[in-house]
Length: 113
Length: 111
Image (cartoon, rainbow over all chains, first blue to last red; front, side, top):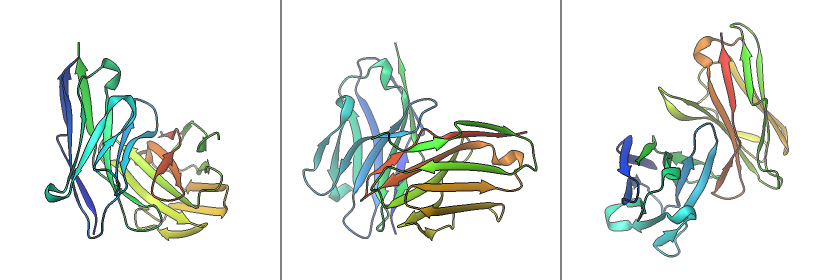
């Protein structure tokens, strides 16, 4: 069965600092992995996705994530945080059928001036 | 494309009333998902359809909840009767392969 664990429900960084949001997955099949972002009072938007091509995936707004099979990880990073990055971030793994995704519990990112 | 469309965006109702939430998926997508999001429980999958057929409704909390997808371009989530603990944001999402596209959500408040 597929599952996702996001370490840290809240992460706080200073503006300009590195952003690192952690995600570990469990999957019985080669996974498709996703990061979504949710800004306040909005729906979830796709940041980036891994679909078995390059292991380093670049997304929107300067975010990227690296698929590491040996560590079963798909951590999200951004070199320099902006105030506008404050949001909740969800990691997800494909559920194996018909587009179903298994979501993590989310990590709320705060950015301090 | 207009994206996933949900209506209404906000709904305030009284306990015991019937509530119907509506969703129009992206044209050409063959899977549709209903989620509920609350502070306490986070994002929960309620039910999903593939080619208009319900595939997994194990997330539907009680018999008071029901969902239908009469055709490829429309789905409803109904709560009858509604209770205050049903207050949440309800999201609809659609997909063609693995990537899901979310609607803006319906914020439901049951008084």
